[in-house]
Every structure is written in structure tokens, then in C-alpha cells.
Image 1 (cartoon, one colour):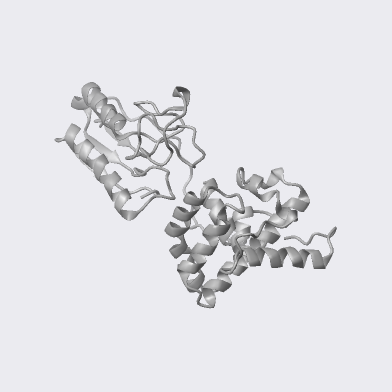
Image 2 (cartoon, rainbow, N blue to C red):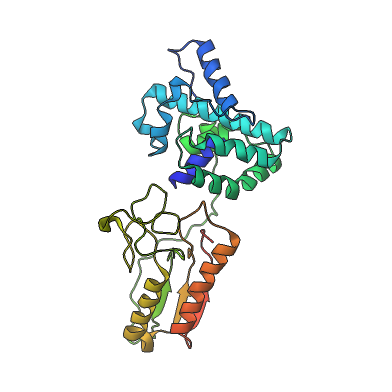
Length: 306
């Protein structure tokens, strides 16, 4: 969640009454220049925005001072406006992605490798929204969605209602079925988040959004090493999932009527994901279920991570 919000803030207020208008304009100009495809490698954050790297680590606007909240909103709108303009004037998407990748570490969002993968994966989606939404998406809408109340068009994006049908039925208290009513026993498997790259002994306390995989490196000491069956700080190795299935079969096989699989099989390595990798993870799950429960009916569905 933090990673996605960080990328939105990168891609994408109240007026600071204690500041001169020229100083605000200077901050806006500096932020827009940082998002430019011609940005210099020597560019740095404006002094007024030095707090942003710390903010990206928690994304909690309530921890900011009123002045910092306004500056965060101001910087967000300036950056998002610059990105929208780049897409609309026809700058090549790869040049935009390269520029954003270059300033990702400057803004303190995350590491360069994670920025590269995240921008590569989600950049085309952003481009499609910018070029196809009607009416045109605005920086105020984006920043309001990310930063919440008090920023940009926060009142406009929350000003909507849903018409509910009339004649709502009265609430009925649930009643237990009569004794002897037929029952079924169902195995429901969801949100496995298997890490196909999980490596025993790799670092479970890395600085990436997810650790223990083949990108986190070998642990420097045993206390931070990924264990065989898993780690609380990481997603699940595939052999652990198979072992769970085997235990369930041993304990409940004769009682199961069918199995429900409701998705979210891939790991949380959102900056590394691809269609091929997600399909491989789904196939791994289905192959294990078929292997352990060859004669049990299975009803699969997708989750949001697929």
C-alpha cells in the first residue's frame, strides 16, 4: 500500500499564508523542473521539501505540521500537473518513465530498483487514464485521492451519492436450521501470496517492500535469515503451502465436499510482477491442489492481486 501511494504522489492546497507568493511559485517551479525529462542529475529537493522522504515512509498526513501538509499538497499538484502535461504534449512514455525513475530516490519514495519496476509496470496505466478520462483528470483530483481531506479537489471527489432501491426489507434475525438439515464441509483457500522466489537463508529484514525473495540478498546473520517454512516479514514459500494442503487432506479429506479458491495467489513484490509471473503462481497453486486433492471439486476465482 505505501509503495503504490508513493508512486501516485510521484506521478501526480491550501495557500501557505505565512509565505510570500513568489516563494510558493519558486517551489512549484522547482518541483516541475524535477519532473522534467531534462532534469539534471545534480538537482536536489528544495529546502522547503526536505521533510518529504520521511513522509513517504509512513504516508500519514496527520503527522505533518499544517505548513508541511500544505507544502505536500502543493508539491503533489505541481508534480502531477507536470506529468499530465508531458503525456498530453506527446513526450515519449519511455522518456517520462526514465525521468520519474531518476527522481524516485530523490523524493525518498523507495529504492531505485523498486521505482524502476513500479513505474515500468504501472506507467502505461497512468498514461491510459491521462489520455482517455473524460473529463480530463486533474492534479487536484489525484492529490486529493492520495492525500485526503484538505488537499486539491477533495470535496469534489467525495461529493457523490448512491441511489438505493426503495422498499428495503425488514432485518430478520438469523435462525439456526432445523436439526438434521443437510450440511456441507468446504475448504476455502484465499490470499496465499506465494513467493516463488523465496530463498532459505536470504535476508528477511531487507530495505525492500518485501523480503526473503531472490532480490533481498543473503542474510548477514542467522537472526535475520529466511527460515525454511517461512518468515513473519515475508510471503509464503510454495512448499509450505503444499505441506498445509497435505495436513488438511490427512485431517479432513473424507469430509470435504468441495474447495473454493478465491485468489490473491501472487506475492506482494508489486514492482517485479508481470502477467507471466502471476500466471505461473496461479498454476503452482492449482497444480498443488490437483495433486493433493485429485478427486475433489474445485471452484476457483481471481483476486485483486491477479
